[in-house]
Structure formats: C-alpha cells, structure tokens
Length: 389
Image (cartoon, rainbow, N blue to C red; front, side):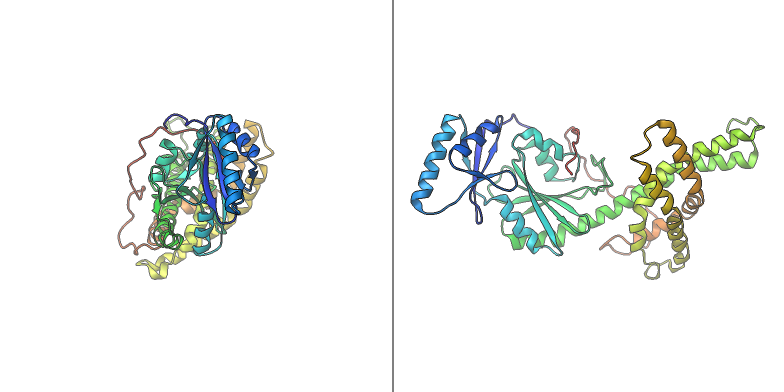
C-alpha cells in the first residue's frame, strides 16, 4: 500500500443526510475535531453530516468547514460519487431476497488490513484492499449467510467493486483456489443489481459449493491412510514396523490416537457435507442407483450429530490439552461407524456432488481432480486478519 495520506476530510452528498464527511488519514481525530467545530454531527456508521438547506446556510457551513480544517491542518477532498451508504441501500433493495446493509468507515488505512483475511476473492477487490486506500465500505448480508463487501472503485471517478466474505466456517482464505472474482459495478443501481444477481451471485454459489466439496474430500483423504494402516494392524496383529502386538493395550491406544486425529478432520465433513447432500439429485444424474448410498451417508451424518453437538458444547469448557485429546478420542470412537461409511462411499458422494454444482451442467464424466478451479494467486503478501465479524 502507498504511504498513509495526509489527514483529510472526504465530502460527498446524501439524499437523507445532506453533506456527509469522512475523516481519513494519518491523524483522523484532527479531522473529526474540525468537523465538530464546523457544526457537523456524527451519524450512524461513524461519518459526520450537516444538512443541505438553503444557499445562505450552505455557504455558512462551507465557510466554517474551510476555516476549521485550515486551523487543524486538514485538507478537504470532494468525492464525485454520492455517499456510499446510499448506493449500498439502493443496490440491496434491488437484489433478489432480503438484504441488510451496514456502512463501515476505516479512518486510518491500517484498519482496512483487517478485511484482507475474511475477504474471499481472487480479483480486483482483494487487490484494492492490499494496494489502495479504502476509506469506507458497505457490508451487505442476506438471510442465508451470504455476506458481500462493496467499495468505491479506487483510481476511478465512477463505478464500484463488489466481492464476498468467506462464510463463517472458513478462516484461511488466502490463495484459496475456488475463490470467486469480484465484479466491477456501474453507478446506476438497477444495472448494478442486475450484474450482481446474474453474474456475481451465481459464481459465488458455485465457488462456495466447490469449496465445501474440496473441504469434505480433503478431510476424507487425510483420514483414509491412517484408517487403512489401523485396519492392516488389526488384521495382521502386528504394528506397522512388523512387531507383534502382544499387549492389547497398545492396540487400544492406537485406536484412540486414530480416533483423535480422525475426529478433528471428520468435523469438516459434518460441517459441510449436509448442504452438499441436500443438492444432490441422483434421479436426474447418470447414476440414479446412487440414491441408496446417499441415504446411507445422510444417516451416518445424523447418527453423529449428537456427538458433534457435544463437541461444540465442550469447546468453551475444556481448556487442557489432555482433556481435549481424551474428548476427541471419545468422539472419534463414537463416530467411527459414520467415518467408515463415508470413507467407503466417498466416490459416489463426489460424483453426485460434482453433478449438483449450482447452475452448472450435469457432470457426465468420472470424478475430476480435487481442486476445481485454478486461478492466478494474488501477488501481494498476506496480512494478519483481525476478525471483521
């Protein structure tokens, strides 16, 4: 990112708030003080505003602001766009479903770095957050958990950028291969909403489906080798290095260790597989016979739900490493039948889930490689992510 700009006040107009001002730069508190002394009042979201009444009043407000800004060493910048919150509300009102909006102000450029972690993007939005100054944004949310980020398009006098946050289950979004690309929006809200509804949201839904699928398959792939090793030891009566297991306690300990590791990974299956299964329509696929297997997989998830609920309940109670290890071993042993069901039928699940990609053509071939999309990764260095939400 370029050096922090000098302290400034960014002015724009709002149909509901009149003249809106955002303090921004090295020492934004100086800009805030100038605004307060000029008669501006803080509004929802953290900006300041003064009503636009008649010509005389407006000139008085402008004169007071210029003088106070000069006294505090603050520059004034006028935005060619309307207040971002207004555009965000207009956009949300035209999107399918019900959306809420919340304006966020980043008085100092350092604050916007907190967005880099939770933003899930492989396009211009992420690059803007890394390289450009973003004084404000609007977060749009709907009832099914989709969360979008809207900013003014940097280095352009018109247009906006819109991308997505990752869903709350995901923290590590850097260079994630399924990430959707943010979209450039026009300044007209109806045209912008059409672009979001017909282009961005379908891609977002496909990307999230593919990410969930990769997460489930990766979890199972990590469990499978350890499970095969444990089964081979049980059948042979010998450890992996060929030593006979004369003490049954050793085998019990091996089972507990496997259960501990397997439960950590199987939680991803319990988290992400249900929504994928809900989209599978085997009768419409080339493999209608898969319906029976999908029922088995659903039953396995349902049988493990009580264990998963207990795991979540204990997450804020157990603090010792030994306590967690013992609990995970117990959970893994309880879920072992479900884990084995999923290991045995993962290929059927994979082909049905791939065929069920939202808005995509029906898959007619064998399962493809794990990573469903491979896009160029951002060139910048990842930053630490403070929680946006």
